[in-house]
Image (cartoon, rainbow, N blue to C red):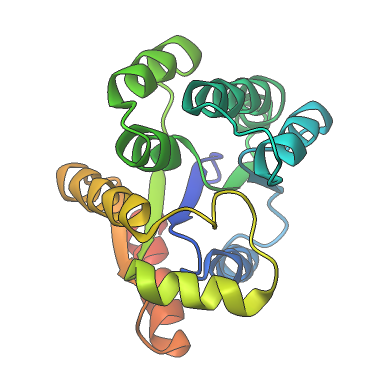
Length: 208
């Protein structure tokens, strides 16, 4: 089994179960790569500076946030995280487990906000050829996901978006997953035990 650090990302709409999936991924790594350093990240956020931007980015406010402002803030966070945390961790051989990455922007700001061209341009500027080794996309019907999100409590600015917004984001996720062998789609509407097993199977196929 290779001990080279790799970047593994968990993606999905609101309510898809990313938090539970990340716990499962960490437990799997602990079993199969005991003692190997792991770094967990989240986007937007993941560094002190990026977390400050995240707080502004997610909180509902009286002043509407322009779509381009949202997009630029996301990539400011991502650039900071990649350059100061993710790349240094990978360089020293650590595994990096990410809660969202660039695929989220392609889906949310690209398809959801109608800024696909701008997303592609910023992605090239900030990331170049840098991509995750493996992405686990947790696919769920947006209606189901939003019901789960509401059950968690108060919604943030993104979770308050329209169903159409999330439908567009989901179709973008599915399109990218169908075109990229490094993206594994997991049916998140299944019972939790089956979702977790599918996650472990995908990790084993890609990494063992």
